[in-house]
Image 1 (tube, one colour):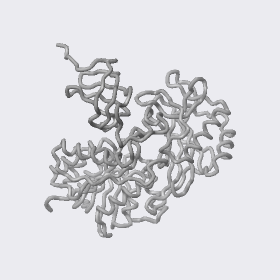
Image 2 (cartoon, rainbow, N blue to C red):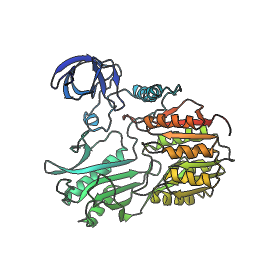
Image 3 (cartoon, one colour):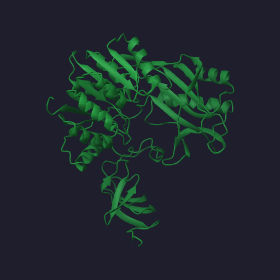
Image 4 (cartoon, one colour):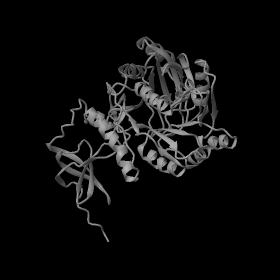
Length: 458
């Protein structure tokens, strides 16, 4: 039996936007059937056309506004919305912060968790904050271009000012783009497998101002390497590192495993919470240094450290949280699955003369079980997992280790809420309001810090 849907493709309608999805799309409902409409905000009365219909929901496009939200701001360049650079760029910043708080509140409510969520910690200047860019290189109408993919596609939209990136990074990308054009280097074509340049990556230290440029190539051979190097060096005064990264596999993975230093040093340096970090092309280093300092400081403050505690930092990366915590703890143990990251963490500890931090390579959940068997008794466990959240085995091992406090730094509210329910089963409860931190202004992402404590001391 065919289900009768309340709307059909290409139909034009009017409606009022009632909500905003976690992806930043407006929601209009027809007989409880949701239609997702980009660039539409709650409270707006709109005329729209239905562009795609499925069994459970439809997509639409705004044709005209009958009334606009007081929270709407005019975005100078619509490409920021079209490419997903700034999917919330049309929403006033105070409203973005409320949206992020509400994202967490709504998920907690759905899970029947009655927990408080503090207002989102925002930025004074919520743009030009990113210290790293990864931009694809493509042939557009016969010319080599850098830019960003249109949402949900592999169609490159040429962009010169990325709005959320450090302006020096934007300028550096243009220098590299023009140099690639000058020496007629061809962009890699996914369809044919031909071409040389895949992506340009640029990092810039927030405090150090050191610049690293990484040319990610499909081929081992980089034609005109010397001439390219001389051109980029001359036009980027803060350049400290120019690297060729070879990624010859037909893959979505951005970086390959092989780096070749074309000029300068293999790493750049920057500071975070007063600690110096060496950053290589492959290093995972937070992209918003100002907000990262606030995020990590919040985590450290909430851990209540006084120099006597043993702390485990699961998913330690290059040691950013571990080394900041080491100043306030007796001993810190960090674990991370990426060997290069652990090498970086050890070097960063040595660079700062920190001797009370020990780093091991391994899956966080497996290493936690090993430490638990070896009788390690942490006072505090800090977890900062990827978007997929924590493995159930890690939560079980944590329950058996029984640290007094768990500090959960999350980048995905959905997996945070799921994991909090599992921690409750292990005898933990949330003792303070969850603190959202806006690491990625103009986008729908939100980080947060949650404090869990044992219900009873076993």
